[in-house]
Image 1 (cartoon, one colour):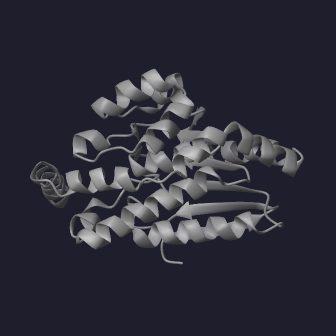
Image 2 (cartoon, one colour):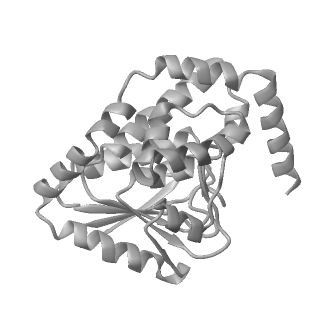
Length: 253
């Protein structure tokens, strides 16, 4: 595996995103993470997962550098892959806690939202869905995932402005559940997930799936029409201009 690191101890798997400095989500990372979670889901020797990164990032979201250079078929294939991965993560039957080690905008936030509990390191970090200012149309399924935790009104307001929250703001609206010092991040995540893992596993898992029933339906629904609109906007001159400006700014850093 090139983009993730995995360790297992006492029936608990810790997956660390490990792709460069920012853990930007490309096809390889998403595929490796999705495959690993499928394997863990089927492994009776593993009872739960902690998903983390390395400061100052959890994940910077989709790898716009790679995506910008995709052709039309590659872009369509990638977004379908991301939709499928998100659906699998939302439907993951075992406890999964995100230990958010730093910045987590856009796709990084989506991964955290699909988990059962979010512990975030304190610091000058940001988290949220900022796709709209970047020129990317947000599917209803992703909006429903956002609203599942922070409510329809807050999700609507923040999504349409691309608001990014600092840890204190995120805690206040329910986007995250806990803030700790970075050195205590994994300890806090372990403390929470062990409480989940102490429950009778089938009862816990089925209850989770029941709670998420409508959300699971949303992320598993046919999103071909939504994707068609997303891709039309992705290739529009306005969005290409925004993306080009972002990439130029990244190259200057």
